[in-house]
Image (cartoon, rainbow over all chains, first blue to last red):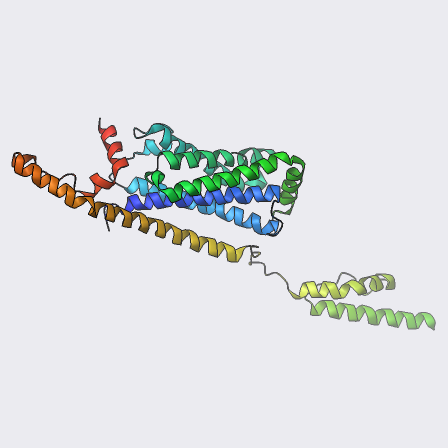
Length: 187
Length: 144
């Protein structure tokens, strides 16, 4: 096992977690906008939930990789306290903020039935914050920020999310109807 | 006489209905003393109910997810992507280390030949120092 294995683990885990979270956001926007007619809403909802859970799992891989790597020297306070890191405090702090929001979204989604719908929805809307903050974190703190493929992936994903968000904003009535229907169909 | 015949018909229909429901695994809703109108009303829906009851859900089993196959596919793709990215990063790192290493070594040797031997430590040729730039800066910052 190479001395840099944990560092590769952290990098790959972070990229996959970001990609899965982005896909989950796109899935959620598809649920609320019904931009595409073909995938059934219950199928999209199931995939959306699974992607959210999977992104949390790969976030854990990302954190374990950073914690286990002896070279970076991140302490517990760097993971817990935002903007406390001595290395690129802003960029790393954004990652910590994104982690907290992602965990909040996942926990409230798991406890959706026990929470008021307005509370769940308010927390769920922070997924936009997670997407933006995690993307900026990847583009500023990540070692792979100079990778052209990663940059293009960020650009493409951001464009799709922005377009779908605009569609949702411009058709609020349809969005509200779709959201309520999805919630009613949720098992 | 007519009433007696009707009673027999009703009893037979109720018996048949109960037998059909029992075959489907459902408990009868109506008692043998139920009226003929109830039995007649239940008769058309009995076949539907029997069909539905033919596939009873086991108490311990969970409902299948709508995207169960897609879940497996996405999980596999995620793990494959993870190892693919990690492998690509590792390969790029190894090649990046391999390429400048001779130049660094040459520079080190040149420095060693021109300066004192004690200053010719090949630090730049180590993989961490050349390719792990960001954490190196972090460590330096943290140490200061």
